[in-house]
Image (cartoon, rainbow over all chains, first blue to last red; front, side, top):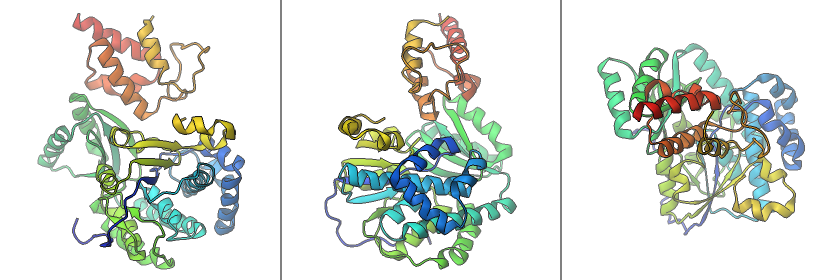
Length: 329
Length: 82
C-alpha cells in the first residue's frame, strides 16, 4: 500500500454530524434509472448538460446498452446520484459536513464537493470508462471479482491461504463488512473458491467483469494518470471527502487525484471509511443514489442513522416526505 | 405446500409484491425485489426460524430463484434433522 498515500489534511476537522455518501454502482439497466432521469426536473437538467458534453443523446444509447457498466450506464448513474444529492439538499434541507463515495461513488463525491464541475465529471467518467475498457480488453481478461457474504474474515483468509499454496493468484478488492468481501481472482479459480466459501456457510453473490481495485492493475493506474487526469483541472474540494480506501480526509486538489488513482490499485475498505466518519463525529448518513449495498450492510446501519435518498423518494409527493425520511423506501 | 411462517418471511423480503397478490411457487423472486442483500437476510431468517443450516450446493443463488425451490431445499433440511 505504500507509494499511494493520499494527501490528507493536517488541520483539525470541526465536529461533524452529517455525511452525504454516494453508493457504489451495481449493474444498471435502462429501466432502473430511465424513469427518474426523464421525470425528475433536476435529473433532466443534468441529462441535458451531459448530452452537450457527450455530443450524443445519452438516453438513446443507454436504452440499447443492456445491463452492465457501459459508459452510458455510468453517466446515467452519475446523473441519478448527483440529482438526488441536489434534491436532498434543496427539499430536505440537509447541509452535509463531509461526503464520501464508495468505489464509483468517488466520482460523484468529487463533483459534489466541487473539485470538478458536473460537466467535467461527465467527461471524466467517460474517459475513465473508455480507458478501463481498452485496458481490460487486452490485460487480465480472465480475471473477475466475486462478492461473498456471510464469510468471516478468518474463514476467507484460510480459503485464500489454500489458494496461495496452490499457486493461484487472488487479491481482496473490497472489504464491505466484517463478513462480506469482494475477491479478485482468475476465472479458473472461481469454482473451487465458491465451493470452499459455501462449505463454510458463506454465500457467493455476484461476479463482476471487469474486475476492480487490485494492486495488479498498476499499469492501468499509470495510464490513467498520464492520459486521463492530465485533461482536467481539479480544485480543492469545498467539502472534505472521506477516502473509501482508508478513511483519510481529502481536502486538496492533489488529494482528489490521488484518491482516483489509488482507487484503481487499492481495495475499498468500507468499515475503515465508516470508522473515520464516526471518529469525526458523524452520526447520520444520507445515501444519495440507487444503493444496493453500502448503505444497507450491518456496519453502516448499526453505527449510523441512515437515510436512503433514492429515485422513489424523490418522485414522491412532497406531503409524504416527512414520513419517507423516517422510513427508507 | 409451505407453511405460514415461510410465506410471511418470504413476503417480507419482496417489496414489489402487493399484499393481495398470491405468492405462487414459480414467482421470480428477483423480479419482485429480492436482491443480493435480501437473499442474505432471508437466508439468516429462515435458518433461525427452522433451526437448519444451509451449506454447500444449497448456498447458490438458484436456491433463492423461486418460492418452491427454496421451500423444497428447506423441507429437505428440516426432515433430515428430525
